[in-house]
Length: 300
Image 1 (cartoon, one colour):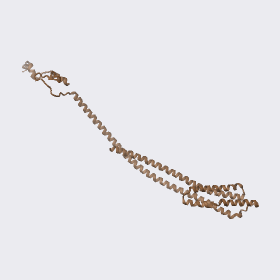
Image 2: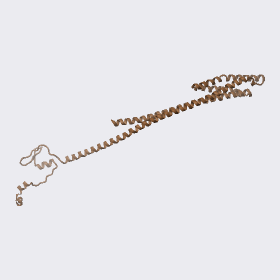
Image 3: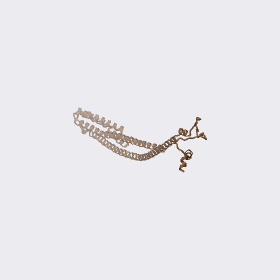
Image 4: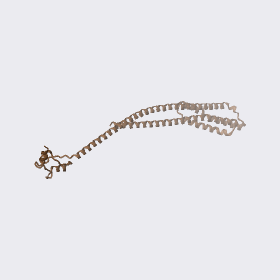
């Protein structure tokens, strides 16, 4: 019973080690996946925030180039850059959930709202002036241009601020995840060490018990062999000696013995047939004197 209980505890501890290992592996994978997903998330936000600053600056550049150099290609690229700017803002709107980051995003969206309309108004004024007089006086639209420039500068500044904030949030999350991972690793290692030590202890107990059982079995085998040997010796001794048992009818005169079949036989023949005794003939002293008195008289 004790041996079975020890085996059960031993294999239970091994199963527990396996479960701890599986838990540690699964937790590690979850942490890695979470970290990778978070890294992709923050990277996408930081990239979109950087692209916001880039697209709004490029939109302003194309607009100014068109107003100054009158290149048609810049007129075509201005609304495209504004559209790209809005797409990046839409990406940010879907991914950002932190209140502090959303506040910055709201400022970006507020300043972006009138860029296309103000830019198109300047383009229309530019085209009409070229048709009417063949030249465009940018100084006459100074306030509008500077107002648009301030909005664009604010968007760029907020974009950089948002990207910086997301990088800081990613770094903070990285630190927290690493701390949690280290704590889980510490707990897992501690449990593994405890269970492994307990398993080693159980294994040592099993080895000692198995050795004890082997010794007992060996002693038992030796005892059985000794008993078998003694039994064999007794059987051999019994086989060498045949005992005569029961009541034997014997003649009071001639000393013949009546066998189980009713025949009278000489006593020496009966004993020879029913045992392994062998008779040799001789005379006892009394019979010798009776049969050969002459020999005894001479001696006297």
